[in-house]
Length: 382
Image (cartoon, rainbow, N blue to C red; front, side):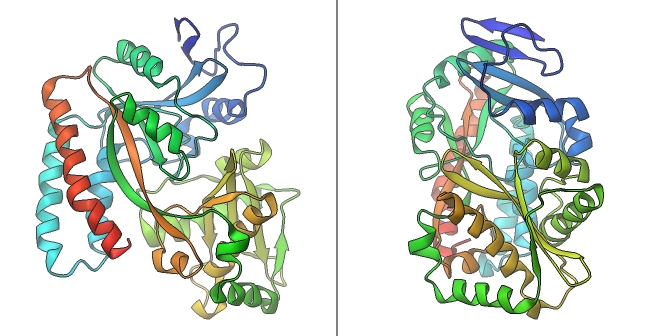
């Protein structure tokens, strides 16, 4: 596939046309790696068409979905706003509001299906729980919107994981270009780990716990297939088994690929017999770090503090790089106790080219989220 419009081009990474890749492109190895193996092979609960969009000197990974349901939220908005929300009600104490919230989610389920919300093209979608957009300021958003709307006239155009802290210029550009901003969740961020995280008493306790544990840090200068299998297992135990099967299910092959091409940097801890007990895999784009992979052996005694140790692994990686930390969502109290602050994250959607009913659904969705979900997230610090 090759589509051109001035300096814009949508193409198949396995068969790129001449001039598709800029001379320097930090996304190329990841995009080509996913294309070679197949998204569903590497991330087993994702089914999507995987393409690349060149805009000027940037190349963005693009996912295209045609309305299927039930997979991970990383490319299906219905999974994010209905399936995940429904599962969260079984975990979060919402008190007397729970029956009303269940009814609201049921109504949203019917409405979003009717509005074909999963017929969507995502731009700069790395298939991670948190996409980082680096130094992308969104100057090309109007051109991207126009270009993709012509190629996919029955699909919404979307960008996940934008917020006023990690990507303020991109958020402003989307707002100015008329993209609808759908609140998705509250994330926990720390601008200066040396100042805001490290001095906290809880952070000192975490460091002391690791020192006294007898565990040995592994920087993964080398990674074998067994290591990748164990990392995928530890991630699965936490994010899929304990949290939600709607989180992306990373395979060992994905772990090994992201280690080899340097997309993620991994750090773990092993006990005396060499067994890997906790791990973190960190992505850095621009001056922001986020940990798409965090895991630990959840069957071990809680007193061992393996989640605290896993968190320490990626916060120290951020400190060493002088990076700001986007700690993603979840474990709100834990992160606040260590100096993180909450920021609302959005999905931006361009839909002016769609039929009126689909525009109306997205507009209603944005209003309900702003008026009900955002105040609740802030008040309950979810």
